[in-house]
Image (tube, rainbow, N blue to C red):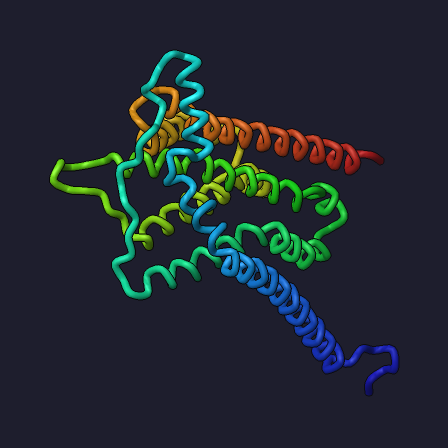
Length: 288
């Protein structure tokens, strides 16, 4: 015999199942709105093909690009012409019948992802934040702004620093004078997109370190131990993407090294706060 106040197992099962389905429905609408935002910005980029290609995508391939003009101004100030880039000896071609059309669609989609990224992350955060404890929500306050700011900073760094320097390096690299650099549009757009998006994701390092430090997988001591390895990787990356002069290598290596040091600072802050909370919790348990 079942008591009136005793919950029915079937009802509990249905309630849990409905709760799970409700979460799926909630997730579905967050995904729908995120995809819709990406598609809207992608369509806008597709329509504005002249600005997207001639001004944005092909910008780093022109000697009047902002980065090249700034390098020439710095060269004038220090009386050195080595860092002034006044020629980019290469051509961009389309060797496939569908090459330009496919790159038009691909580039529009990449632009849509970049522009819609803050909104997409905001939708993602709206879905997971209700499942956090109040202490965790307070600790992660401002996460949307921090992630969006770091992503935008990384995208700008990739576009204005990494992309033009990489284009200059690859355009001037020759294994023989017989070989002439004539890049396919697919290769060019893929390289620019990879550098820009990769830089935007690379600048999420402090956020990743923050959460890994919260769960104890990363510590400041660990990051200091591998600091020398990080410096070597950054210097190699700077040497590969820049002309053979120290100033250009510093332009790309210094921000990346600063990002790594900032991540160590974030990990140290998280560790100190975690130790403080543990001491306070221990004192509370020791009270009579």
